[in-house]
Length: 293
Image (tube, rainbow, N blue to C red; front, side, top):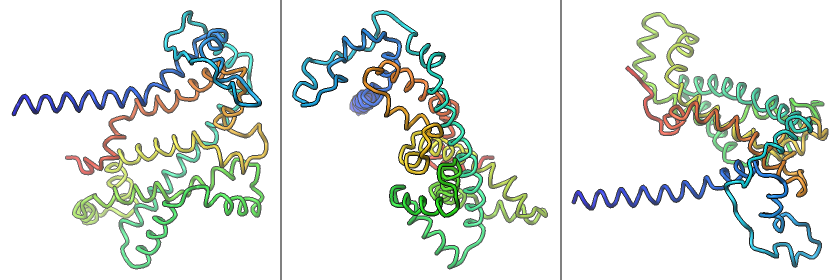
């Protein structure tokens, strides 16, 4: 029985490793290829990115997926960081749009979740039901109403047209409400008996208990809006205000080496946030450890 158990674990580990490697291959390929020279990229992938009007010879030769450059070169990064300021401008546009959305959405979600947790009733249940319905709708469904409201408020082609709808998204409210409801009522009642008010209960009991959920939500929201494309394309007509996620799709085939470098730089903030709060992310998603001694 023990041998069968070890064999089963080994098979599960190998299977998980294969799937993990398959998911990581595009990321690894992007990072390593960003250190290749343009001539080496053309030699390995030239036929893939070759333009063709008829499409008959779009891929005429076998593509050589190469993970280790023949010669490490920082030419692409030098071009991105020093010779092409538009890339850094778009990067900071992404930061300016995403960071306020994350901070505001987490703040709004924390207050709303506390309200849904503390006050019960049919009205609250109805409002929360509509929150769930809104969460199930893809953003494309509400894009036209957001456009009309932004136009009526005079916010089109401004960053507020992106930030305000993002700040009041229902996704974070739903997740944080479900997590906050796991806090024992006896803990809150004990705080009330000690003379704590609602604000003290919210800041000193509920928020510390939801630290993992807050970080998980912040990371998920950051990834979602860091990679947004539809919203800035529709609501921001000025290309100078659009984020790098939009600009990445506009890099032409002749600059594919630059595209690799820009994509690598673009992944750094998300990777750093994930590595910094991996434990909080896993704990928040698994809904474990809501009360700690």
